[in-house]
Image 1 (tube, rainbow, N blue to C red):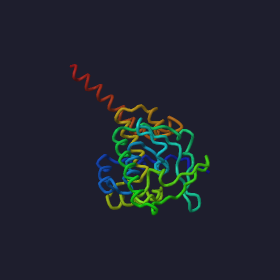
Image 2: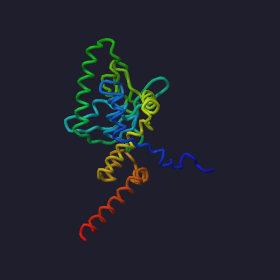
Image 3: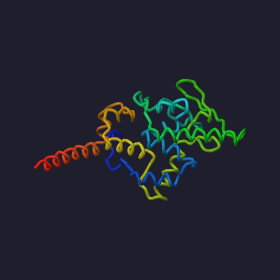
Image 4: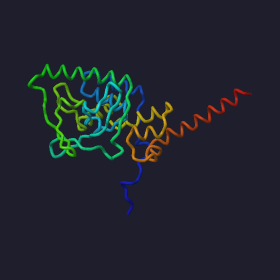
Length: 233
C-alpha cells in the first residue's frame, strides 16, 4: 500500500499571503495585542509556530541582531514544556534587521512594565526544558499576554480562525513562514541561505517547496536578458 503521509502536498496548500494581507492582519492585531509579537517574529524570521512560542529572551541578541533557535514548545498532558526543535538543522541562528530589533526592544520594555503593574498577580508558571533539565518562567518568555500567560500554539489557532473568517484571508500561522521565504527569495537571497534560515535539513526540501518562486525568478532573468537584447538593437 502507498504511504500517503509521504505524498507531497499540492502547491495550492502552500499558503502565501501578500504584504497588504499582513498589514491588514496587523491592523486587526496591533501593537499591544496578544498576537502582535508572534506575528511579527514569524513574518520577519520564518520561524515555525512552536519555535516562536518557545522563544526566550536568553536566545535573543538585540545588540548584534541575532536570534538563536534552540527550543520549541509542546504539550505534555495538560502542561506546556520545552523540547529541542524539529531536527538538528532546525537548531540555528537567524539574523534580524533594525525593524525587528526595534519591535523586540519596545516589547521587552512593555513586558517589564507589565510585571511591575501586575505584581504578585503576574503569571510565574515554570516551564521545563525536557532535554536539558532547565526551568524557565513566564518572565523568560517573549510571547506572553499582558499578565504573563503563555501564548501557545493552541492560541494561534484562534488567531487563524479570526484571520480566515473575519478578515477573509486564506491563512494559517505557517503562512508567515512561507511568506517570509518567498519574499526574501524574490528579493534575491541565495537558496542555500534560505535553507539555513528556515532550518531545512536538505537543500532539495527548500528548492522543492519554493520551486514556484525559483521558476518565476528564472523567467524574470530570461525576460531581463531579452529586454537587454532589444535595447541594443
